[in-house]
Image 1 (cartoon, rainbow, N blue to C red):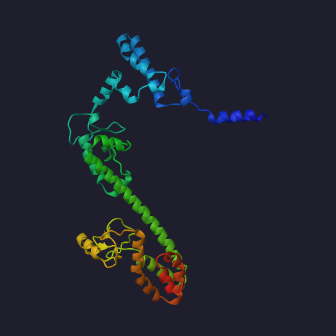
Image 2 (image 1 turned 30 degrees about the vertical axis):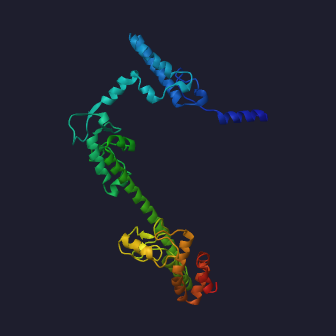
Image 3 (image 1 turned 90 degrees about the vertical axis):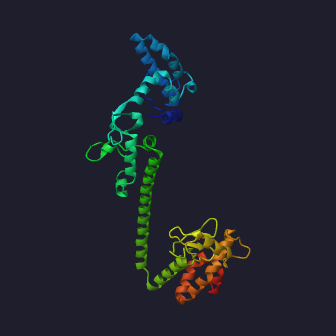
Length: 364
């Protein structure tokens, strides 16, 4: 069928701007078709529902009920959405009090019962989706126990806590408690333990992922090494030594690498108890006091440097390069001419800024 461009444009506009709404006639807010469903339109529908309940009470002879809710219905069904109350405000109305009191006062027997006897109010515990109640005292012990389990068990539950009836053949298939449910039902100390358990699991998963990636890189590197000839292997080994053992800052004791630091030049290794000097890398035993005493008089510091702090970072890195340069030059002189020339070609970009004098020494 041939249609003009105006008709096509109009139909396309309608197809892309039409919205479908589902609602019960008589319960829809005046703005529903313009705004779609909003909290305010839901409150209007609630008002109409309350009005229907009120009419039912009136037909049953309870005229007083109709009079008590008339103001609530009027506010909930206000024409302007901004004039309708929020759900929290509406819930405070006396009309809902019997319902809320009933929910608050519902009681059940705790499914563990280790620290409680008789009936327990639902507000004093956590209820799983299948209706098993665990009182707060028993839930504290259950959550604490789950949080301290080995990683294998935490992984099975993704670090969450299930209903006590889910294990031991009791057959509860309810979903685990949410964080908010546990936060409202257990003590602050136990909830902190729960969060730490989940963090422990997350750290384990991240560590495994990193190890898998590292293993993949290692295998790729090994495969690449196998494809190198003897001369290329020598260059590769030399480059790795220069980058990892000479140019990289490390703990003088355990050799753990660090990229940078903040604050004082008296450093403490994150892996071992070693305290050492950032200027010269000297091991100052396990004493922070000895490290600070050494930094204060370290001969590797440039003239005019602060007693403890590195000051300008570019000056600090230049001083570090000056400290490392003799070691780098000595290593390079120990290589055969072919390996040294190939290595300097590969490292030229890395060494250009801080080690240009070393490059010049070898004619690069």
